[in-house]
Length: 593
Image (tube, rainbow, N blue to C red; front, side):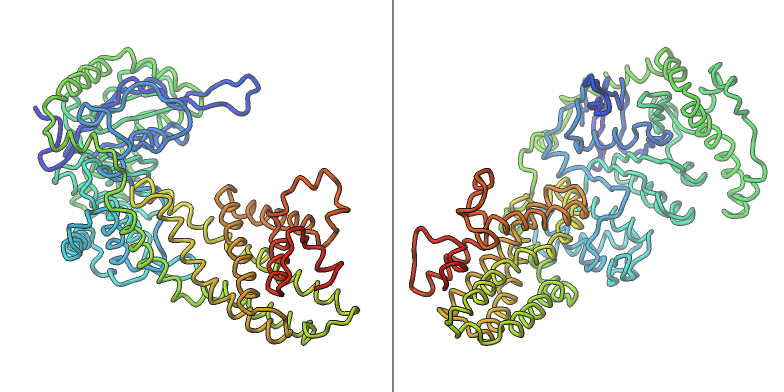
């Protein structure tokens, strides 16, 4: 017996897995067990379900299987083909479909899949082979009719919810993963679309893929698609309550028979009675030929799920968990897990190399950067809303400065010194305050970035380079526009090149500040509050509002080099041919230009 699927699946075994996190609400630094003593397995050519009430630990377990939990402490073993996988293996050879769709709204369905293929398949494979793989996926996922439709967003209509879910599944399948994990694949979908998605996923088992999905409230038809073979061979249902295992075995009648054998099930107050009205309704919905199937699912699965939901609400979960721990079913599971782990030596050399892989990304950094630029940066540069958000303020503020300071740069009278100093002050602080424009970009892309990093599409440094090229490319155009308007309109003195470079450098500092704060802040609201606070602090200690000599000593700890206004004033004096090492920003105000 081999420990991997005939076509490409792989056994996944879990042995005595416990996962705990710190309880921040407790003053005693206690920990909370989100999962306790989980033991089970998932095999190729089968679709298995993780079920349980909300907060039972379904998604936590799935994230641990995918290597996506970095906080907390996990004990026990999670093995793939009997071996401990590397983080790189989990990123490259497993697929994970998140509950919420994280797609690029400006791309079409076909472009989204091709973009992922360019980053996750070997560069040497060639573009034609990648297109063929995308074509095959479009056909398999029934996405051919919407291949040229943009994905869209809440403000721009695009593909439907079911099509978006199938596109997300396609992204996970583009690398031919050995194990496919899905978190609530039917969430937010109507019953017809949910059945369609589950049917599609079920079809992948014929190719040998190991499939594990968390399911919260499946339709009767969707639940009927999970494997119902004998529990000694395939265990397709893992039921969790309060982080503990209460059942692991075949779904359908074996699961219900097991629960009906427990005394706690009879004292729960939830009687085992068929809901005939629901049976008739489902029979009409699915067609008369499926009436027996609908009746079977309603009678068994809904009672099974409701029983544990009621136990969770009443706090009786421990009774069922203890019963499972003492059951013969648990002993059978442990025996099967030990058998699968002992077969690790049967793993082919190619699979063993995959399990030991160390590089999380397939393509080199420069190729990943080029793909990101082609599919994302160049697309944004053609987006009118993206350009307007970054260029319109330059035109407006340039016109405002020109109309306020028209021709004042050529007036060297003593009375005009304050006006010139004010112009210089605004020239080098406007970019910093305008940096708020760049905050939404990074915060709104964070879910997409996290998903793509977990999928091994690119390195963090590659993504950062792409974002900086994207913003600096627009900043060059915007700063030139601003410099031309203000320099000649206000008749500023000195080198135009230096004046432009001062504004451009300050604008780049503003972009960097915005991105740094956006990366550190948990939400866009926090980032929008933190950025102007930080910029205002730098403005106060720059030497324009109050001279450095008069700033209280405790504020002098702020380095002068951190204030863009101070550095810009120094540069302007240099452009006039008057460099001084001891120059302070306030000198432009107090000593004149």
